[in-house]
Length: 556
Image 1: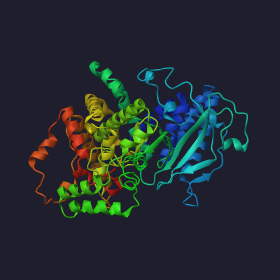
Image 2 (image 1 turned 180 degrees about the horizontal axis):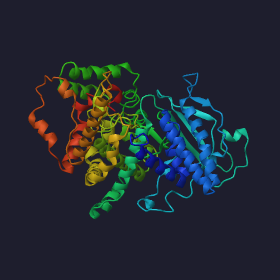
Image 3 (image 1 turned 90 degrees about the vertical axis):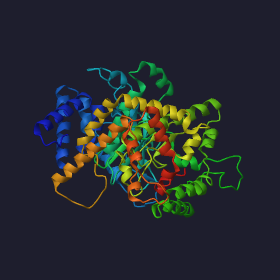
Image 4 (image 1 turned 30 degrees about the vertical axis):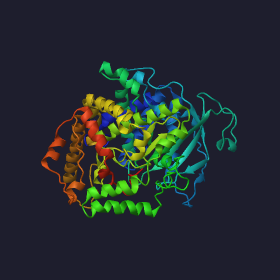
């Protein structure tokens, strides 16, 4: 909003941000970091003015320690941005050594950029002037490790380690070795992911995390007294984490510990009773994307529909060649990981319920790109964690291979839910989550409304080379934004309005066509149970799965 066309609005917004930064400098500095280092000179100038104004206020109130903290923050943020952008000369290197950060204040004076330290306490929500707005005691960062791990993904993000010490701890050892290893007095390590987005925008991920935190509060407390105990028993929560934007294209993300991707878990699974030489014994074969036979086989199967228009045949071949040849194995991973019966049952239940909560929210906001590496599982308790929120508001429907399912519900996930599949804890959790979201429709829409004028969201459905006048582009994007909000409103009223673009582009020859009854069914609001049944049916439909991009690995 600091780029608003109205000068009075800009003045008021900047004044509010200065007051917030002066009141809570240790927390607010992280959220306002990207303004100070924006690639746009106007935003950068306003961000610098906000920090300078807050520093003057702190100096006037004789809070010199906090004044110096704000002053030193610029150097810390620049260090992190430069590290995120750095590309080593050896492209295949897995680690790199960096120079330790040195500032005018010690690193332990800064709050760590983790959700537990920066999020407002639930007890303080809605209470003006609360003295306990943030946690009082938070572990601090003594020093960053000089050894940084390079991740293997295309963007090559860096895993940064910080040695943790208790608040108020004084370090006596200051040798160079103390920056590369733990020393006496350390209480553990904190891990962060430094990331540079070449095309995406991490501010979008930060906005979605804010929305998820609102939804968590709605899930934990309901206006319907009869359902409070039931919801708490189901323990429906979205596992969130801190996303701090340091500039438009760089950010630092809180590392979620003890997690592994769905793809890796399936790859590490094995069936102990299958033959030793059977391809059905281990999951490694079905997760090997380098296997040309696997990729080509799926695309040939898909071509039965894409090129020949026979979706029924494509789904049948998909079932026979993939699902029967590569049966699900995730059930066995849970059995081997949690050998205590109580832990196994709790982990499996938690996986089903957390998957249900994410599925409900993902469908409502149109969250796409749910491939097997964007869904993580906490290996310590079975909790499901979603990452990468760039593809929202049904953007996935306009990919070259449209993502035509409301959420990921593939055979291995169903296998992990147990003998009842989607009809057990998952369906119960999905019913409870959708009930909460629909009951709080007005609250969710009011939270989503700022997205309408948010320059972060790319409302253009397709990235084309067509260019028009600036006014026509603004009008087109405004219309698209309102349309997306209307789609969300319809879903919160019980309509299943996920339209498959393939049905319009590809002519089917297997005696099936979209008729008026199908179109009318999309316009009629369903009960919560009816909506959930429709969502599960569409998400697990083999006819939908066979249409997805091969890298999504629909057979997992």
